[in-house]
Length: 418
Image 1 (tube, rainbow, N blue to C red):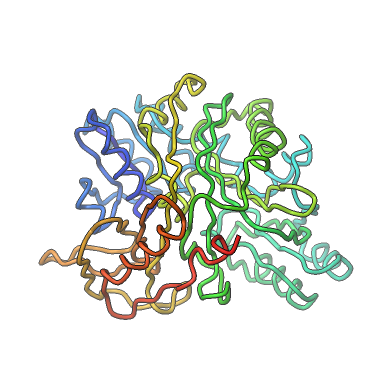
Image 2: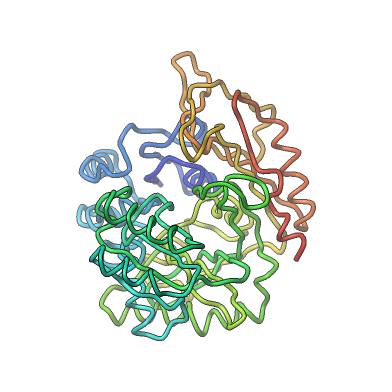
């Protein structure tokens, strides 16, 4: 079976490695992939947003199943275009991907269907937003409506910071048209949990929970990033809380999307805050999270491709979806300066490839692997328990080398304290 995976980061590398465990998979194409993914798939120089070229390639090369992994092509309608050309896909169509593509939409959905979330207000006028900020209780969270590479959320501790956040998003247009509207919401407290889930529009099957580490530096200091590491499972996410989330959040969200005429088929990501008043939704993503995927999929015991096909065909209620009782830890090794400016082109050497998912690298003309992004490698290890998984991941970090590398040294610390 010929598979095509759209995207080119650590998440896609983890997806490709997991798909390849199915003996029916004969060929995997990655569009565009990266220099490290090239060891596991045929990389094709077609960008994640070049939907027309993706469709043409899939048809010309007899692709039998496509996985659209990143948010941008999903929100732009890649699944719709591929399905229209006869290519079966894993991922939501454009109508359903709006759950991530517009925070205004997702807030409206949660409020309409009583899905627990932070109290919020929506603004399309800068003046109105600034007036609101002057009296609203602090701290505040200011979010750009549209996609912003995971960086369109600003936590403001003071009025000055909140006003500056509105200015940055709506006036300076730091995130482009994504900032035409803003959602301003109350600041929630409690442990954060990421739960990726398979859904076919009717049934929802959560994967193992995880904990992301967004800040660039140890002790959750520094700027927000796309994620500096993750652990799974998340110890704060108990069986009791999982049961509540299923009844109060997961099932109601899938049912709400179906009622709105936007049935969601694919991977629905629930970003949750376990507040003193119960679990609440911070955000939805319409796809696998990164780096969470790099700890969740290594714990999957059943077949990924079978689950993906069941999501598309509406047969998830009969699918075998299982995860191990073990644990996983991923430490992201990044380029110094990330998430702001950083240099590229340094040679990467890996003593032992076990557990390394490549996120930002390219192949040189003479076949060497060179850094080509902010987040370069996701170094992942699994074990019977979380302390062992964290220890092994950091042992593996010592086996990867490139100039100007940096990584957090406390991935999993909060989880271990729990």
